[in-house]
Image (cartoon, rainbow, N blue to C red; front, side, top):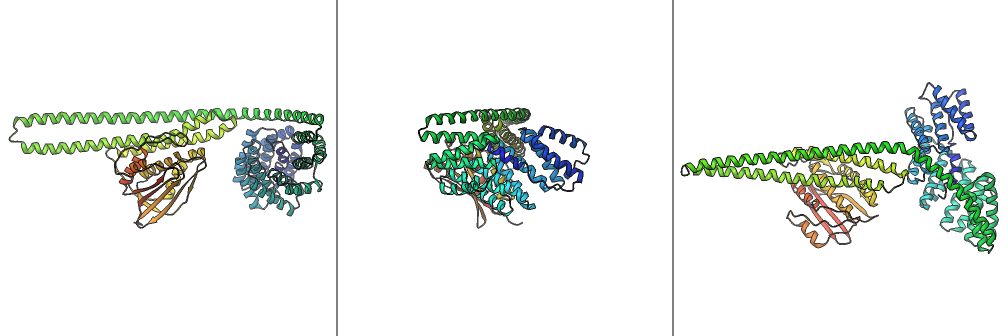
Length: 620
């Protein structure tokens, strides 16, 4: 929470995002100016006036209406009404798109970024600030570009990505200097100094901090600057100088009510006095630090309670939707079981009918055996053909059961993982995971429907229906299906997209590639990579899937490469995943159906490479 209260200062400038009223009448311009000045000192009164003006405004698709929405969302944010502020920013964003108001779009994106920044969701904040930066660059708004870059730098510094933070601060500082924006230049120099302090590059830190010190900053920046100089002297063991800077910083912080700065510099003063042996003074400043820290903690807890209460309604609604989706999925599974059982009963009835007919024919043949030997031979051949057809039906049934059970494991496992995570995460993170859970449940529903549709086409016998497909498009979709598992394991999937077309059954390709990708994810450790690329080789198109995981021992590799249809022994994955051993068997069978092949290179401890070769699709 290092910058949590520093952010309150920067928020003042962010929510003052440069006003550019477009096509406003003189009376509307006057109202906006009055409300804009009123909102900082009397936010409740300003909000009442804004709501009344919104109710009275007949043209809800105008620049004036957009200005009112912006002021309303800004006040809601300052009052910690994050959910209401986010909803108002969403209205501003949609309206601005509809009326082509780029300033409104940039404001909405910047506001959403501030909400994430206030909630310490820095990755999400960077995304929104970067979108706002793109819009402001498009319209050439230099002041707002400076603000966006400063915000992005704060996010990267909080994430510990100090090089990115330095780059963002330097760009913001350069634009502020070129466009005569001194307050933003000073803010960026202060942040640059603190980054160099974090990196223990003390000379560079001193350069920027002293530059701010001698440049007459405002009281907010001066307090923060003096605190940084006190920390610099502490690191250099110049304790008397640290006390001098720290005392001045504390005095200013008290005057302007900067509790976070006062708490931080009181701690530094305590450390400096302790190093000099002034234990009484050290204890006095440590108590002051504790007093400010407790006050800040109480304020933060109040904001957390406010956020949690506002989020509760949405969480309950999401839970109802999840339960509805799960009930639907359960109903679909029950219908699948009914269909399969019906097919099994029908099969047994047919088998009983054939057997009974066979017995009648046998009795008839025994009555005149000498005259019907040839007919008996013909009937025997017919029975053998029928038995072969029944065998094929049985094989198809077994293969369908294998595919349905195996391919449903992965999406259901994803949903299970998300449900397990839901018991362990904080309330504010639940929304993010509930969205992922909804998405994964949707995938399960789509997967079941697709499998049922495909299984229905195969009930009369297993068929392969090849067609011309662009491999990289299908592989990208398969990668999206397993992206959540990859994110959870922090495994990077690098997909080198190429413009190659193959002749293959798309559904069977999905089974092949999904099994291999899931296999690679299962045996790949945290922060490792999976690479996918393509190669044209004569009349063949090759897909290479290479991971840096556990690899295979020689015995497992020999079983997979053999021509037998035996299952392989499924080892436990790097995150304790458990398999069935069916995956590689299905891959081999479907490759054979599509006149394709697979080569495997693997060694224990060094990873595995699968090379799939498919017939190249002709133009006709």
